[in-house]
Length: 141
Image 1: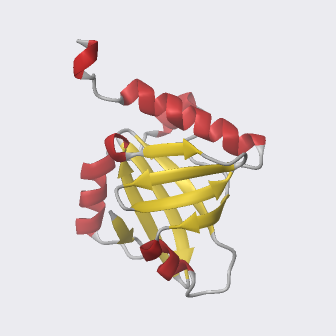
Image 2: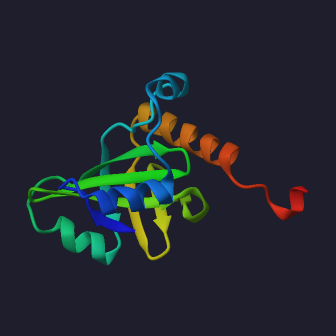
């Protein structure tokens, strides 16, 4: 779900909270050691996201916020803020090339550079959290 989150719209906020859960409390953020990624440099995206990013000449960057049931990938274009809402059951992460992570949800994708230790540490934390909170598979019963 790709949405414009520039304005405070209660309907969009409700949909986001249904999809990925309400934000973590301050205590939960502290115990997790932070829930946000460092600044991520976008190298490639799907067509719909690319059409938004090419509207301005700024460097294409994004960040990721962890939620209890998913993640929110946020980026800006012109003066608008956009978010790609991805529940954990639809989230697919690939580490293709040496320093590129690919984040997929259905037909949307974003590829980001992982050139620093902080970025690699965040993705490791994200994968661990996803594994811990994934629904029980039928094979595990």
